[in-house]
Image (tube, rainbow, N blue to C red; front, side):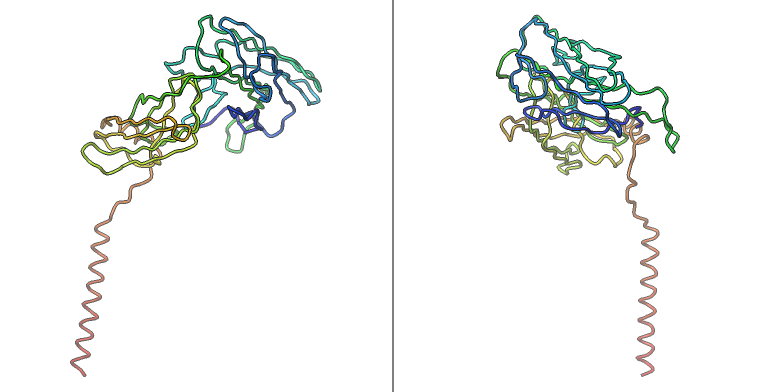
Length: 340
């Protein structure tokens, strides 16, 4: 997959309860950002926004963009909803997130965005982001990230492969909102789907797992395997640990290495999950079917490791040669014995 932007991890911002990170793009960076923490910040030790708000409240929070370059730059300040990636981590910079049906308050829709923010050379600019809480009270937390992206020049350099490359710098400042000082909402998991799916060109059996509560699911561990109906042999067996899920989100948990041909048939998924070192536990069992049509479609476009096929003609030929050599050796030994 070719991305228009080349993302490189930057430094980490505010690791306390959220492990919210700052993401930087490109080889050199000439700007930095920081959050002005307001009086309704729940924990002043955090460097991300961790706010207690009221239903219907409107508040503007501020981020400072410091441009250390010798020339002025333009920046976009955009808030994105926090979601869960398919590798089981929370991401804050997804521009087109997969919205979960359990989501009642989208933090991205409740905040203002600013584009083309001009920051002159060797100067700092204060940029406001306005938050408007829903009038109806909600339990739990809303989670997102304020993305500060430096605009790049329109001219693109071409790499030796012929593809256009465009570097971009960016940071993410976490934004967490809640209406009670202590979040008492407990995580809950649901299995939405089981079946075959192609991820980044690899065929997998996937389980679509949902965190349907407004709380972060911490230290998630999932153990799972798949059998063919009526058979106890484990065809796919995968265990993953130390995953996290954003509130009211879902992701596709993939089983297997993804390099085998999918075969049509009826299967059963067995999945056990727990979070916070076994404090919360879930067990799922779900039957699913891979149709011949879907297997052909996915196998046709997938990166598949060739299956090892026994060449019986070669095996038979080698056995015949070995037997012929043994017969010749036996004949020579008998001939010598008669001569003696």
